[in-house]
Amino acid sequence: MKKQLLILLLSVLPFWTFSQTKPYLSLADAERITEAAEAKAKAEGWNVVIAILDDGGHLISLKRMDGVQVGSVDVAQAKAKSAVFFKRSTKVFEDAMKGEGGSRIATLPHAVGVEGGLPIFKDGVIVGSIGVSGVTSAQDGIIAQAGIDAY
Image 1 (cartoon, rainbow, N blue to C red):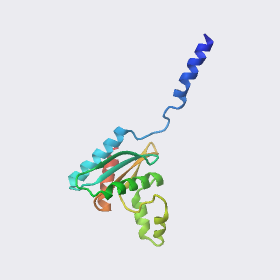
Image 2 (image 1 turned 45 degrees about the vertical axis):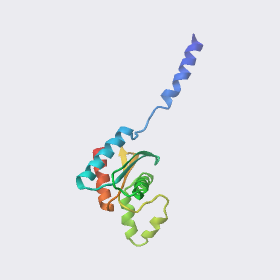
Image 3 (image 1 turned 90 degrees about the vertical axis):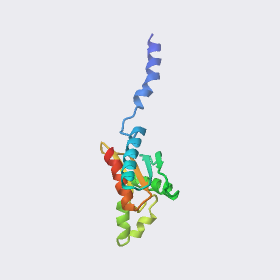
Image 4 (image 1 turned 60 degrees about the vertical axis):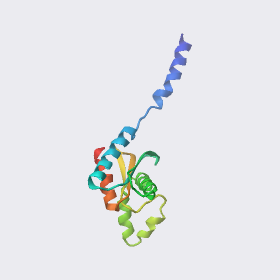
């Protein structure tokens, strides 16, 4: 009996010890953020690509609206990757690039100096990011913020 109880305990223990202990961005969260960003883009008459990444920089969702140039697919993902890797808006890098010595930003791996990438935080922990590309960088930023606001 004790041996069977021990086997049962050892077989169930890994599920308790490896349970999710930090906040994360679910697919449902990513879809909600994407839908809000897309709604803002449509309301303004802007067609864009919207990329949502997890906290490791891996793609959760990607939405390419009709008529958007193919290059925006990679740009949206790069903006999102920059935002999650550096835990800040890509606008920070865009602004830094305009200052004296700002060209050094261009040498940082995964740093994108174009507005449109924002980190996503939950309970003070980074859980992912959004990247938007397709219109001006300021417009991309507006759309990304609309997505964040829905989260």
